[in-house]
Length: 338
Image (tube, rainbow, N blue to C red):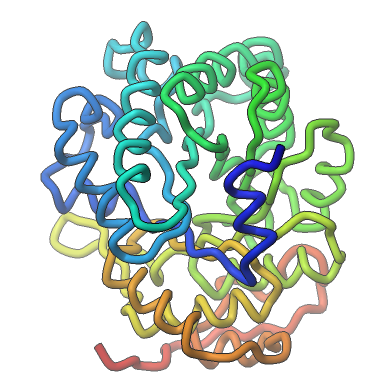
């Protein structure tokens, strides 16, 4: 029996995922140092509003507010014994929103990194990581999510541990990594390495790709890297809304809705089938992305020069695969109308 996500992937040329969680919760009053995951219990109405905003903006898929809802991360807030409870609660709130939508909407249970370093450098073992991910997965499953969604992973060991945990939970899943270090993850993986790693995982994800990172330009270069290998699985692209800048004591992203609409088109043309935003992406960005995807026809795969012209310069001269990659750094960026 196909999952709701598989049905949509079969029926549609592209799917719109959601945007940022943290950015939008900060706008709702979350303070630096607060645990977004505790808001599932403290302010369920605000979490419901977050989910509803994604659906109202046209998202076909939205993620639960559970990115840091594992024992290691919750321990920082003395809530490590509430993993199952908070994951189930967040998933239940999400499913209530999805059930009221007038179209099929996929609820994806967000699973972020543990925040720990694997042995031998750190203390985290494979078994410990699987246990943490499994506990979270069971809470999300009990809350009714359609699919699990591990994201912003840097290490192959952690990605594989999540896959093992999801297999124990008997749940379908998707997975993305963050390529934020000159086309590589923080632990050195390239887009090619990720595709090779997926071949070693017995319980394959329904889709894979990249999220977060540096900016939309860099992420699309990674997507092109995925697509060049002709993977069998659909590709996910969830880029940040521009580049983060620290202004007046706060982090702001400089990507306008128009820039993100260009990003969405380029992501689709680069080979991505699930397209969304990450940090800095608001409902206004999502609406612009959806409108662009619905009204603009598919074009040929974009060149790196085209990506830079539309979205701005890369942060490095290579994506980690082609060391002779062209250096398209620029001092300025194309100014887009707001």
